[in-house]
Image (cartoon, rainbow, N blue to C red; front, top):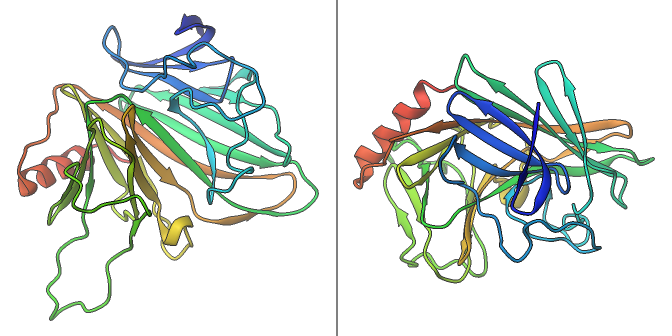
Length: 299
């Protein structure tokens, strides 16, 4: 266990896996606030105006990777995470636990380094300390640094003569323009590039269970589950991506569920950091590249 300063926060836990590492600040959150190759650049966005700050009553967009509650509702989703965390080691797990909020919901990260597979495993929990069941879904947005590109698979092509029912939802927000130059809607992959432009967003259901974010030669591959038959938020999305002038967000979601008192909802992700992995420009080569990355890196 190593505690180091970062970006004005004096106490951040450093977790390593091979030549990759992450920092989880202990002063706000839970938030992974740094992620990348050891000695390299931070792949995550950290906002200069709020870096190193803590306290206050409103929600603050520090950047990094956080745990939210879906569907997006104010004030339940926008509860501030501005206070210190409890940090403990539980076997191979680093456990970061925030105080319960005004809705009696408590957020926790459980993170381990899986050296054998070369990945980080992140388990996100929302505990219900109230007296009644609560309907929600765990939601894990990650604000990545500017300049990169999010890539996610399209459904397998099946001719109309063989399949007439829809493959999956494609969910748009009021501010989404499908002709926006940041979007590429390919036959086998969809891509969202960061540009210095106003917000855009889409969501979908990714049964394949993987997405990628590429930045300056390094690729973050994220594995997650798609639980067949379970309802997901936002017209049945288990994945969403959003960008604006200062970051690009990769978001996965668990299914909607009723969380009983003294119980919790859980959502797991597996993170791989792959150096020197640049996606090809063409649709089919990029799809083959992404599939190959995922094939050898399981959930």
